Length: 95
Image (cartoon, rainbow, N blue to C red; front, top):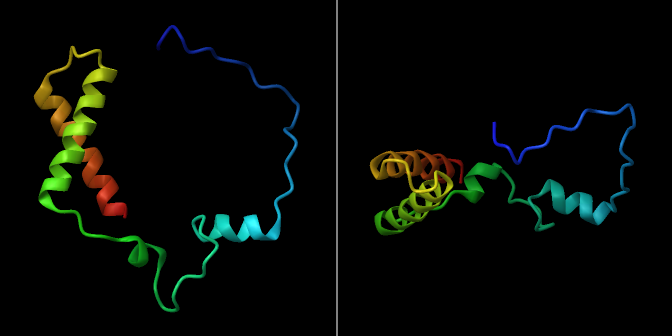
């Protein structure tokens, strides 16, 4: 475990909840836009888009850099690239 992580014990107190307006609640339920989804389409079908091979490669390269940075550049670059591929492929599949 990292030394900068501080574990705080739970207390018996409950956090106060904030009231949400109907407009905000609607926006939260529809993904933040507040607009209704077209009839007969699921959220996944409306959010899916095609990613070009070049865009996917760029996204993987950027993610690999951040993974390497997180590992303080001591990790194998091939391992960072493979981890980035998994991460990007998961994100693209969800969209």
